Image (tube, rainbow, N blue to C red):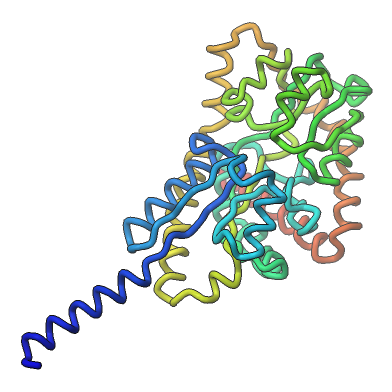
Length: 336
């Protein structure tokens, strides 16, 4: 074979090898493409496909079953990436429920960005914990402040007595609303709208952008800002899949993660305002309540029992996470 033919053969071989290595990676999430998780996923997909021959196939909420089904498929290696909140993973990863403990996250939009971008708890303390479940933790980000929608107005725990509040399937969220005075009911997202329509539940919690997008304000009469939490979610990869990648592909994923994380943190600080504005425009008669600091103090005091329940379940490691989160919140607030 002459030199020209050898060169052509080498080039063809390289091209063929590159084509063989290109893969389609599957990414499942709990929300739609227009929701915060979808916004993150699309940015992640854009970065992966812009900088490699790999492609990302996104499966929005409901396309592969409920949250437990998606997690089982990810841990089994059938899916490569998953975005799932601690409200659903808490039974499997108790320490992740730290993000559900009331009143240990900031509410100021800029402090929220700093907390999730620079906080030691978010950046350093969860990787090993997720690894124990066969998951490579890529990112943790907020989707907006949790707001409670109900049929009747409330300002005290006594006002919540007897109200059936839907929560995600998390034991700690059930503890939270019991401590707040309500009668919580855990159920998957897919059952919520039907439960509100049939009065199976009297209310629920979600960020305003979700409340508006899915018409939850049309199914309740009052929306209350309690200031108790940010809706937080985590993006993970199957650990065996990730470990089997080349260094180049690992760096590709980390770079795409960094870009998508920075993007969603900028968007997250706007989400409460966007959701609230849309609700006010589309449903001007909807009652919006912001608890005063004195009213929040009563709920904050009751939240101490929830924090202790978390520590009892998550142990010393959970206690260290909570203390670090409190330190990160103080630092984030001071930086503003």
